[in-house]
Length: 100
Image 1 (tube, rainbow, N blue to C red):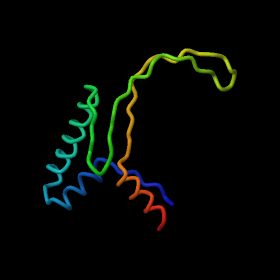
Image 2: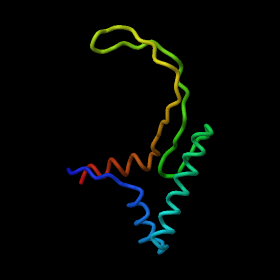
Image 3: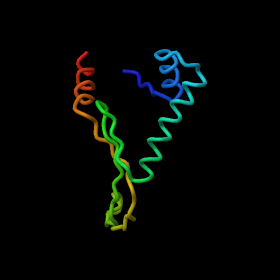
Image 4: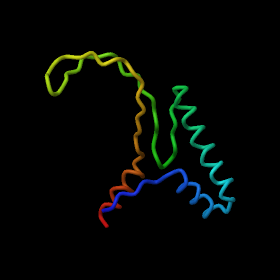
């Protein structure tokens, strides 16, 4: 199975084809939606897109990890991480796609 990456331009082209906006307006719409989503996540908000999934930001505490090569302990600094939890509908759709 050849890997394909969906890009912003692909999304803008899909909006252009489905909605009929100009290519420039479609690209601006995609950029606007992505900016709203990223701004909300930066502020620590949860972003829930119905039938797709939920994006959340988690704060991870400082912890001690190990270098896998040497086994030497190393402190891993605290950080914020982005998590995504797909909806059941999305999980089912992806799973059904694997059957074909």
